[in-house]
Image (cartoon, one colour):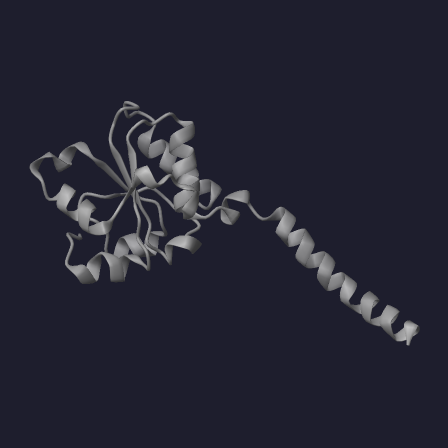
Length: 158
């Protein structure tokens, strides 16, 4: 019996090592959840839509930090595509989009690719803007996805 257990262990060892190697190589931003963003920085979709409907909405730099296919389908009117922040090239696109802005510029981030607690893009985007010392960053808390929580509710899209 001991010989059989050892054999099973040895057969499973390569699979376990491969999984461990993949986990160690994965970018740390993927492990972050949108739930790390302070509650005070969050804004509900209805509140964001009402805020953007005001004449002063031109002050806000609206950044979609999700996947390009989502942006192409529909996005918040006035939003700029800023790349998927879960990827290095997406973070570079985000930084390029805001680098020349005064650090007091109000920025509104959103993604909506998936449920809030699983979004791979919001936390890295938030972290990047905090590291760049932006002072007025708000994040739309899209609970389920952009389609259900924004588009289906009739909020402004382009």
